[in-house]
Length: 231
Image (cartoon, rainbow, N blue to C red; front, side):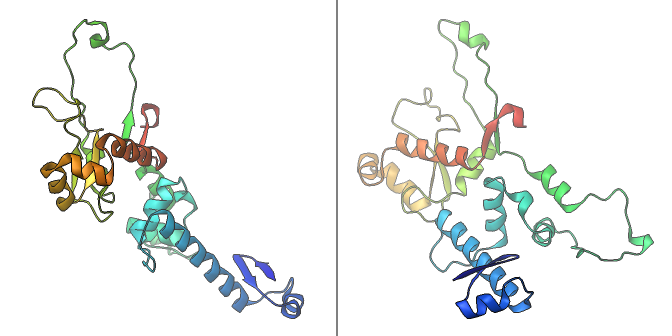
């Protein structure tokens, strides 16, 4: 049966569950923590579409926690490692000369550095809105295209190399790329294949418009795109 410890759960037979119920045990607490760590790691790996057996890295853990709004729940030791700060275990006695009153706590530093990649603001009354034939503006956002470039390729699922601006569908002006929001992540091989024979590539992998929606959905779900008020 399952026995809940301070930092996780372990499976015990009836005899040992009765023996250790309500009692301290360093070994059982360590086993419970190990079980919790493995469960969380596997959940992150699966939801991040990483390969089976992949060893989760510190950047991957931090990215997942940030995208889910759980960065503040990370252990302080991990936060310090990610920020390059010295970790001070609880109860550490510091010399008076080593105390810096103006030094921020690790969680404060982390909170000040977590910002959305793209913060959108909506203006329903732009000057162009009142023009019969408004001149097009092309939306550009390097931060967003760089984020897209780091996502899995929409074709093969491997690491991507380029943020591909969709083509051949009426988006964009004369000899002008589509807006930077209308991009999908592609590796160099898939990028070349798409340009070489767009209909055949879309037949195999899906239309560019559909893949743009999937990319935007992923960005919204991960908190990469936020409203202008969250700047």
